[in-house]
Length: 113
Image (cartoon, rainbow, N blue to C red; front, side):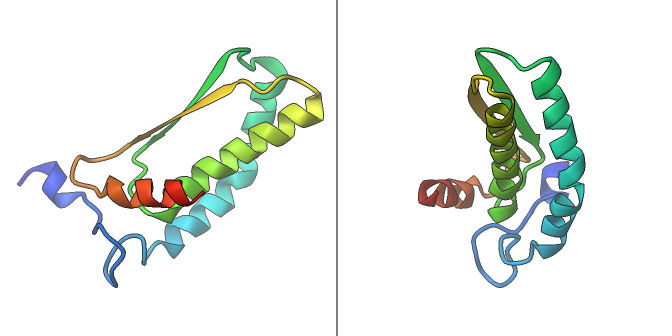
């Protein structure tokens, strides 16, 4: 059996979908937020790119947690740049996961933001 067939999330927004059953991963994202925030502050104080900062979520799955993690990172970059009075670089976000995961859900959520 192919890895893509074994390691996949249930797409859509039904009862058994990842989007409807993602509270545990969201709790983990919240728990590691202080570590991510500290890393972002360190980056902004020492090596902030002047033109473009790229953010990659490799294994992002689909559903609200994908954009929850990325939006936390973007918010922290904005706040840190404002605090340090430095120019905010252009931000690029790359989302990647297994080919069988439902990225249509992520696109719908992104349009609502």
